[in-house]
Length: 166
Image (cartoon, rainbow, N blue to C red):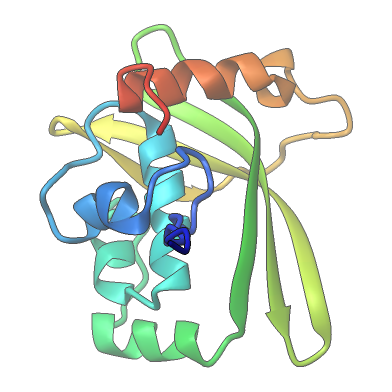
């Protein structure tokens, strides 16, 4: 009997298939209420799925672009293919109301594979985490230790998954 290949989630962080990972957020079964990493991983998967509606929903209203979900989805679909997400570290304030995440995304466009190093900011409001914007004026030549720590990523993943990876 041939082995069945799992359809692993685009985020690549939990080892789960899309429907039991980021798909649960995209369909509204789960909310981004545990960790800012939930927002990052589910937004990355939403880019892979060209899901503009979810991207706009998880973007804080004060920073959200003035566009429709349909138009945003079309722009994403025409922008290339998302290939990989690698998270380097998560820095959350003690009150767990603000966070920064350092990560790299790779995508393929007409010029080939493009890699982009990013530091994004997140806020916790109304019982949910939201993406705000890319961090500005942040010197990442020597990032804070938390933004270059697999331990911080693992701790946030444990909050999301309850410590279990499939």
